[in-house]
Length: 54
Image 1 (cartoon, rainbow, N blue to C red):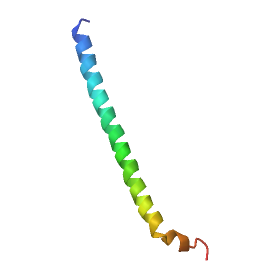
Image 2: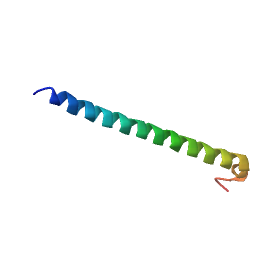
Image 3: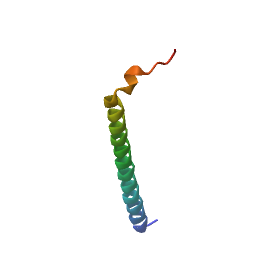
Image 4: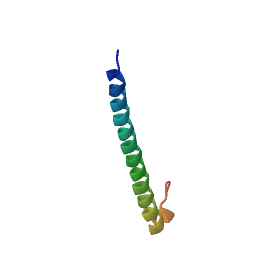
């Protein structure tokens, strides 16, 4: 075990942080797209006339 092990760990940590940021960005994009879809569906008002049991 030498100083080279620290460099490998640092590279691994940097890759892990980049992938974590990508995952967080993807989650935010997912939430935003869902919010837009639900807002459009809500504003159309079709949900007001939907009957579950007739």
